[in-house]
Length: 276
Image (cartoon, rainbow, N blue to C red; front, side):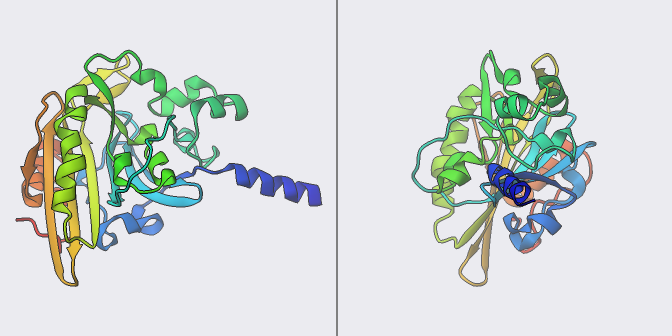
């Protein structure tokens, strides 16, 4: 019995990267949303998955995933940039295959070789590395970028394909990168805590023989706490075939997304975040 117990402890130690499918963000990882209030249901796709992205036994961000289009709808996180190396390797989400699979962010190779998972089974549930091979003019675009996090573990957690969309190569390395790396630094001056929700609007085009949607737009929004009582907010949107980012108020972005998604009025943050 003792060795069985030790085996269980040893096995539990192998689960270093966890991403849990949950029924709601409010009950499982609300800390990534201002006032612990996620965006409203106007962004929810037909077949959603709520993922609390956990790595090395710690939650780092939250992702609403579109199972049908095999891309994230949005990722929500707290902006905490810092110096550090860009991690290598890509991870997938076993629980998208079903609740009996590990609650772990894992490499495809590990799942196939150690957990007897077929690549076909994995491919049915989500985007895989093969989907992003041999792209022309597109590459893997992070919604939650690794550069907005200060520790190696928090950066590594962003390298899950559930946080990735096919992004225009020039946009990803150009205007979008400038927004992530420069504009965010300027905008967050004086902020105590900055909450970010960044997302992608599904488009009419696909990669990987129709498996993975190529978004028509990428968007990002932020709400930050300044001092004790002051709040400020801002937003951007970019067409996913232009190297251009448009700076907006939070209210302007919500109105644009309301039109683009067509599922009712979009609300990204609690009403305390200014819309003007």
